[in-house]
Image (cartoon, rainbow, N blue to C red; front, side):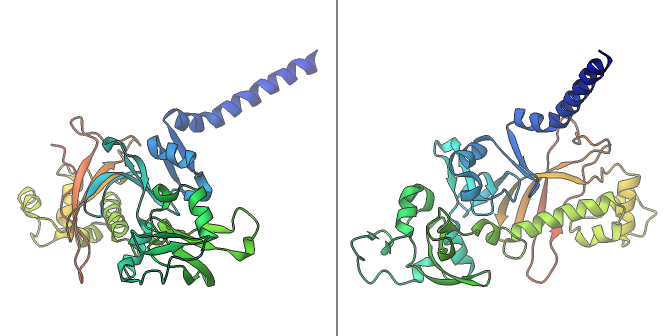
Length: 334
């Protein structure tokens, strides 16, 4: 009887610990999120539903960004999220649902070889091929079968060049580019579902080397991190706004000592020099100016609130030879 009672207690404790360990996961699920420790990002809402419904990991890869409000190709602004193989865009407000980004065309343009410069097909191809007059290219096996089985025009768009051999991560593969994707033929996987794979275009395009927006995000996070960490000289090198207000607040400080003025602002004058919790949205204003919407992490670990607001906008400017600069000071509490 004693052993049975102790055993029951042990089982109850184990069950309680299990529930505690599952609490964060269940909280995320209740919030509509699915998180991936492999990359540290979560998916939710219509983008999560589309990801899960349309092939998940094998088709899109892991998420490699937060869900953001972004402007795409200068014509559409809305919720987007980057994945290893794709960029998903939520067009639900226009009734179009979630769409894949035009990453195939975008990658060719980033390389300086827009698809319109490639010659069309020499002919209509064989009986197993399909000719697309919209782009003057043909699609043949094994890419044609994959295209037809996995979403066709809506998923991949039209072929925008003939297939050719390309070196990818040190290996030569037969590939073909589409408006939204790149298909790769992997002979080492012949006879398996992985004979045709989709290129990692999201990863190739969304990185600091080829995507200037990521560099801007890093600069913004660095600026507020320096202020929060007391590295005022580094923050002064990143701040490109006006110092007149800080000079008015601190007439006893050398008006040219920018680091000292920022330090006074953060320690005595009411500036809330807090680290970035997350960047909520971004949009391009001009060729060299971007606007970011930011949430800050309060000192108690919660989301920083000021007069009912939790989100604040900051402008960043770029230049060819100069640094990325932030144009505004942190939030101010009188």
